[in-house]
Length: 339
Image 1: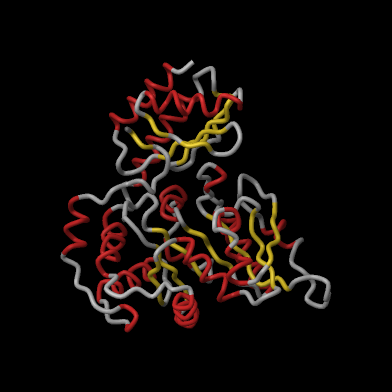
Image 2: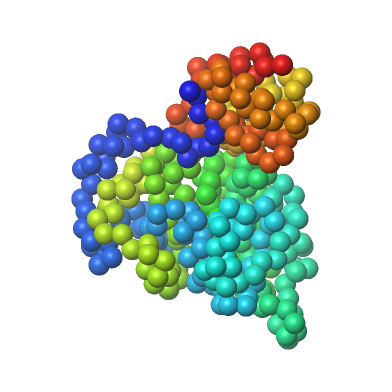
């Protein structure tokens, strides 16, 4: 089977496995795992941040950040399709006891003008206190679209004037940087904290890193402990993430190129109404007949192609480092043969 369901399905390469096996380890809860420490320092340094915190997942890094910023009864501003709201099990309510202000945006992307309309008056006792703005880049539900960096700068300026922290769910942040060409440190300077996923696109088997100021990470480390996230000889898995950051970023452009090939093919078949414009490695086809979704997914599977439903009447394909040119050719042929 050629698996296009997600860029999380990748398996570590032999080189990555060897790097992981040979990793030097220690007790990370005591701060003594050298590989974890190196990963945290390296990831933070890429974006010009002071410190990092290795965690088991992007959900955990996002939820830790929200819990640091938000007190019970406060509010997070995010898009209505944001991962932190839609796909993290109600964690904002459960972990931080905070509410959310959900905005419409454009393909999952928010603007400074839109955000500015929804910051609550702190003197109005009827409303929760606005405590955090969070954006996602690339935006999964927007078909992997990338923020205009100038808009991110405008959001940063507004948040600074309003005294609000700005968090980035950067699950696929390196895909965004490959497209926008912005220096990672310049990009990172716009955010108070960033969640970096190591197992989406980069090919590590597990893990994410939360980065920010030294004081923020000190607080985040305490929250991680409360959430049961303290790991011991975690260097074995941290090594996979370290290898990924050092070896698998530049090649993301290959995934984007292959995704564009799928976009072209899907736009040429009768059963597709349109394809959300492809910018990175996510390809979302909107079907002419939404009732055929399961039938088409089954038809793809029967011919060796795994894709996934992406809401009513939509099918998603995601390219990644385990997909090669031959796989793309085979997928395109299958797409053309489906009726």
